[in-house]
Image 1 (cartoon, rainbow, N blue to C red):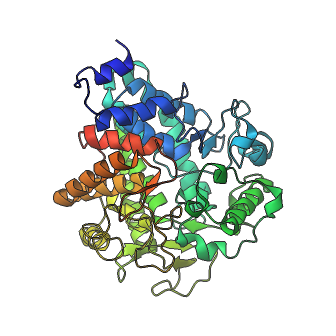
Image 2: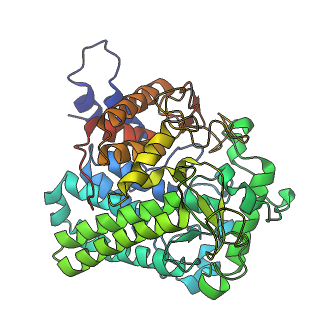
Length: 471
C-alpha cells in the first residue's frame, strides 16, 4: 500500500483529512531525498535548526528519514566543529535564494576553518538543537538506531559541535556561547538586535538582490535597512575567513551577543548528549556533561537573568560595561528588550524553582499574553514600542518557540497551562495551513504556508510520549 493510502485508508470517504495527515503531507512534499526544505519556494535549501525540529516530528512518520535528515546536516560540519546554518542544494539556481553560495564562498573563504570541499554551506551557525533531536529520534526506534549505529556515528560530530560553541564562541569569558550575527540566533529580525545592529553600517543595496521579497509580502519581512546590516555583518565575517578567537569573535567583529535561548538550547542539548553517552557506554563522560549543563545553567542565570523584569535578556558584549542595573564587573551590557528567547530557559531542568515560576508569570502576564489576549506567545513584547504583529520576529508567534515553551511548562509541573498551549498550537496549525508564523492574537498565518517545522512540531504535539531530558 502506498504512503498516501496508508495515511488515509481509515478515514471516511468524504471526511476532511485529519491534522496528522495534513502535517504528514507537508513533510512528504518538502522532502528532497536526504533532507527536508523548510519551504520549497522561500527556503529551498537545508537549514540547520529547521532540520533538527523537522527530524523531531519526522521521527513519528519515518525514524529512518529522521535519521537521514540529521546525518545529512552533520555531514556538512566544518573541521573546527561548527554546523553551518545552511547546506546548499547545488541543483537550486543561485538566484533562488540570497545570500547564495557565491556570497558565502565557504570552500575558499572557510578553508582555514575547515569548511568541507564537497558541499557548499554558509559560514555562520544556528541554535544547537541537534543533540536533543538526535536523542529523540533514537528513542523513536532504538532498534533501527542501534542497527545503523546512529548514535555512535552522530556522537563525535555533536561533541565537536558543542566544543566549538563552548570554547571558540566563549567571547564573554564566562562559559556562554555568543552569536556573531542575528541569523545565528534564529530569531533574525527581533527588536533585541536593534541596539547592537545600530553600530553596523549597512551594505550598499545595489550590491545584492533580496530574493525573499519575491515570495513574501514586504510588510512581513525585515526592512531594507536591517537586511543591509545583516549582509554587512555576514560579508565582514566571511572576509575574516570565518575566524573566531583573536581574529573573529573577540577581534574586529561588530556584533557579539550572549543570547538566552541559544544558550538554553545548548544546555538542553548537553543533557541530551549526556543521555547519548550513557547509551553508548560512556558513564564518565555522561556524568561530566550533566555536571557542565548544571553549571552552565547557573552561569546563564548569573549573566542574563533580570529578577526585576522576571525574564532573561541578551547581553551585548560590544556595549559598555554599565547601563543596566546589576551589570557592574561583567563584560557587556544587557539589552532591555523582552523577546520570547528570554522565556526559553524554561526548558532547563536545573533552573531554580523561583526563576521558573517567574518565567511562567511573565509568559502569562501582559508582555506575552498567554492565557489572555494571545493565542500563542508572541516573539516580542505585546506592549513594546517595536511590536509588529506581522513583521518577521518583531511580534508574530512561531511554532518552534511555543513548542519549546510547552515542553518547559510541562517539565516544571505547569500541566494545565502546557495542555492549554498545546491545544492552541494544534488549533492554529490547522487554521493557518502550517504557516511559517502567525499573528499572536488572531492566529492568522504570515510568511510561507506548509512550513516544515510547523508541520513537524504539530505531529510531535499529536504523537509525542512527552519523553525528554532530565537534570
